[in-house]
Amino acid sequence: MARLSTWERIVSGISPSAEVCEVGAGDARFAEHILSSCSNVYTYTAVDRWARPGGYEDAATRLAPFGGRVRILRTRSTDAALQVPDSSLDVVFLRGGDRTPRGFVTDLVAWWPKVRPGGILGGGGFWEGSAHTAVTAAVLGFADGVPGACLVHNATEYAIVKPPV
Figure 1 (tube, one colour):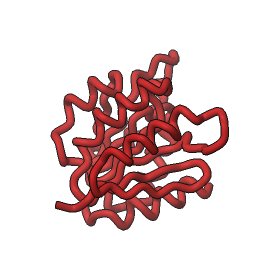
Figure 2 (spheres, helix red, strand yellow):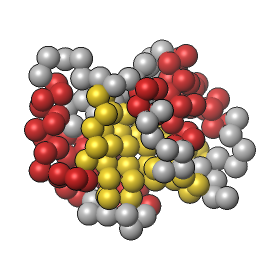
Figure 3 (tube, helix red, strand yellow):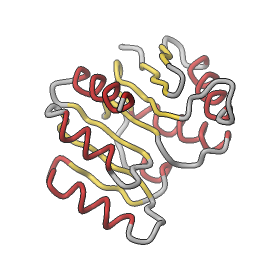
Figure 4 (cartoon, one colour):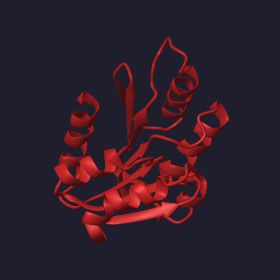
């Protein structure tokens, strides 16, 4: 539950009308929890291909009670990023997508412009010294290449804060 409380605090404190996006929404339990816990979420965009039979239907059912606060994009991560205006999101949480080193960097590059100044792009799979070194290496390399970005991480999660203008 620590992961959820961390992201609850981030989302709750970022904006009085937060625009949040989760890439790799899966069963939508994370989305459901954030939407239930964070009344400041104005729009929650859930992105996934939902390749598992029944996956999309399960997620849509779970998110239905939140009505107009939810936008569902059933497509690949990079295709979804093309549908989102630049500098429009307060928080982007990368959970799924292509977890190869190249694919992960592609997702970081695709979604970073969508984060508004002062916003956060973050996610899980950040495990230094473990099998997830591809994610860790991609995040570290990406954050190092963004002037003024601030990378914060713990043993399993990361958040890259976009510098204010």
